[in-house]
Image (cartoon, rainbow over all chains, first blue to last red; front, side, top):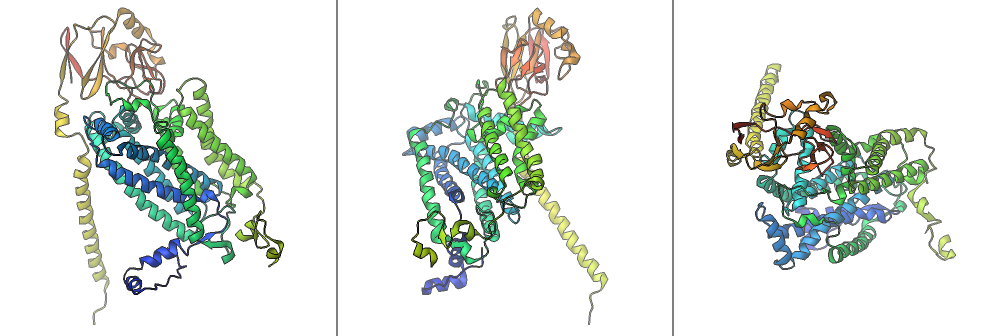
Length: 421
Length: 175
């Protein structure tokens, strides 16, 4: 994936393999010798965390599939069987269910990091768009996985989300019937969701390969938002990034384990332990927390077609971010105004999440409308204009200059004799 | 000896285009079964046959729920008050303007038969709730009146009417 390979096979067997399939040198150049900017902070470890979580979800998911039955009469029972009868079934299911939440937590931090440091800007547009595609696939996969236990929330989430497509003029109802495979959400729907829920993670893995490929072609962005110029600006991926990623994956696992072992149902919804009943809608339908901001956007608009359009636009607009942001400076460190608008955006996104969990009435609706307005204004008004009006701070001449003082890391208490050397 | 003439080019181009066209038709033909298999299958369609419902046990003001094509159908035995309320509202003020007379069958004004699925995003509205003595949808707050017409909230349409006819004065056939 990059031309920095200094890999020389030593043993006879590796020399033999190298001539036939140079996979060892590919891994060496991509994940060992690969130069990473020396100023990366811990926000850059979330790519590694996300790869780890994808692995966790695939492993636990494949195992759960050995015990799950995708049929309307048996799905709920088989999930209860996993919880009560299957050896360690409770652990595997809680890992999978909370793993999805952790996966989304990590992806949101990863996305916000990319926005803060301008990682989507030239020449990383394709890298960014591949990321948006991964995120869309994650949302589809997460939604279909949530339907599989066939509880009340599963059933009604499936009903509401598939009905979003009925907003499409003329062909909406035909599309919805096609998605259902019937006249309502039913057994054909459950079966196809199961099939696709098993397929999509591998599609995600495929797009992740493209994402990493694009990353290794363009090189990593960094907190200073300037390109590495000399060898002083970079450190080899191994051990520096590998160890840092591994350390933070371990820290992330502490949080993950806390959810799994202490509050495994905290992020779920009690109604989903009631078997699906097509004759009764639960008193309150709320999606999983990671969809709440978009749910709030949908509900803030009192028109079905416009609401659904706003919902999909709020996600798709991310793909256009590289062109909506007109500023040449990448990192928010050197963009004082952008930084304030960015944090307002984070607050509005989290605020929409909170409002999405509240009933759609009174002050909640008004606040949702204000925050929805800011959400879109950030992309189509603030970012395009800021590039022209903002007075940015001077950029450092090099990455090394931004983190080193006379050859010693900023803040490090090195002996003065070494500093001079 | 031979030079590539423009005639050769044309012949080769024709072969490319013809091959590509046949390939495209083949690919499109393969898509038909792949897409069509997701539509309702024969058994689902067969199970969607008409059903008959006896109306005589439904008390004045009562709303019952029956299932047809796995969709809930509300049958509302409307009181005089409900009918008056539904008839006197200014039709033009409604989001989906339809007079009460088009929501029920002539001579059977006390019977309202509607598909019990909110036209917003498919939840089942709760009977006898909301401000209009009709239905209230718990999902996103849509409110329907005693003729099943949308009055308030995000739903764009009135509750849909299923095809039905009166077999006798106290029996209907839905479907």
